[in-house]
Length: 169
Image (cartoon, rainbow, N blue to C red; front, side, top):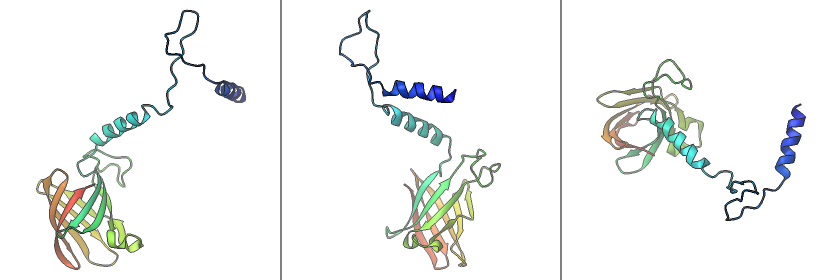
């Protein structure tokens, strides 16, 4: 039965579409829709659906770059913020916590230059992220919201404290 349906579909697909004239169809000829590219509107639909899904996520969702005061980028963070709602894709689906990963830009090609964030706490006064680089002491990033996808603060790690800015990419 399935082979019959497939054969019929293939036979119909092999037939060229009828030509389309710029004239409206007469009563004797059937109406034929104009040929359009198969992806016409598809990109717009995908973007619409993506934007709708993003609107349900929290403000930290996405990729962020941590930049030193001298303008040099030092870390990339990829954060998943379920917006306070349970997320079936999360490490703990029942707990709507922000999760993420980090990448040390200077060591991006090594296994030691990346990892998961141990803790992310978003509060009324700011954001605190904790992560470890191998067996070194913890890096603690303490930030205050500066608005428009920008956070400012201090990265306190094994090499001391440095002033930083975190921007959404």
